[in-house]
Amino acid sequence: MDIHTLRDLLVEQIQDLYSAEDQIISALPDMIDAATDSELQNALRTHLDETRGQKERLERVGTLLDVDPDGPGCKAMKAIIEEGDKLVNQGSEDDDVRDAAIIAAAQRVEHYEIAGYGTARTFAQMLGEQEVADLLSETLDQEKNADLTLTGIAEGHVNRQAIKGD
Ligand code: ZN
Ligand code: FE
Ligand code: FE
Ligand code: FE
Image 1: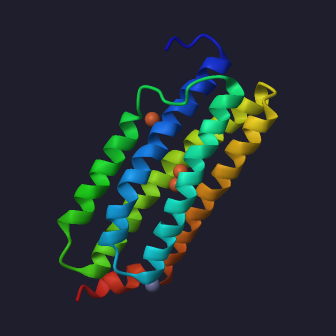
Image 2 (image 1 turned 30 degrees about the vertical axis):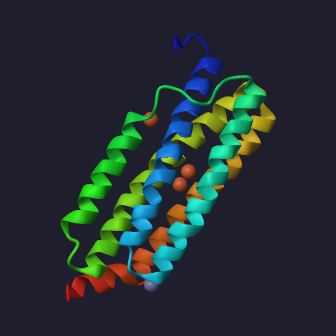
């Protein structure tokens, strides 16, 4: 699509996020299966549920803006997921190291989303689309919380366990 206005830019960001969420919904089950730590598994499962809701929220945003959220597809998320998948499968013989790799990969996903939702939320606010901004804020908070939870698990015990390398 051509981008001439801030509204066009908002729509492009929404479509990018919609594609990203869709890819994350497909990728998370494999990450959950690959994880050993129960806290990590639970955090990823909880976030998979949240992610399904996030996709629905973007569909509501599409309705509010009268646009199709399904766009050209986010190549960056495709690459982040592929890179994470490769990372996780490279060191698969040590459970703790693999868990640390899963967290490293998952946090890259969350940070990409935080950037996208923060930007889109601010564009929506600027355009006076308060309902859209509120929906995007809700998801932004979930992404930030997911990131913090992963940091807590990594710093709480997974990284320490991975040092032992046994
Ligand atoms: Zn644990
Ligand atoms: Fe998300
Ligand atoms: Fe993208
Ligand atoms: Fe997320």
